[in-house]
Length: 68
Image (cartoon, rainbow, N blue to C red; front, side, top):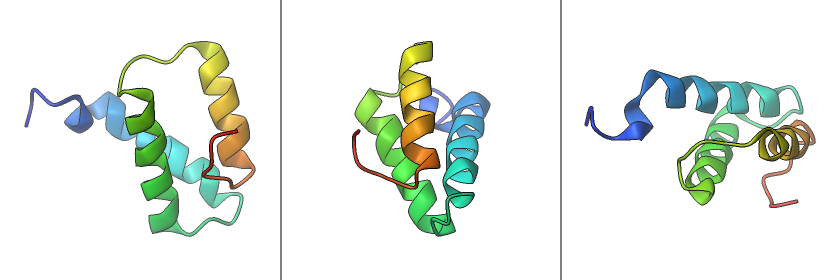
């Protein structure tokens, strides 16, 4: 498990931050976590460019799980 990036402290922090952002838009906790994981997995679990993060923040803050 320790070789899997999903279990790294950095990934956990990212997923929790993404979840918290959605919670401010009224998305339920588990749904927000699921959406966060889905967005992370769709991205390939790698590094994010600033423009990608900005688009993701906009999408998640709006409470949308879809690709914008």
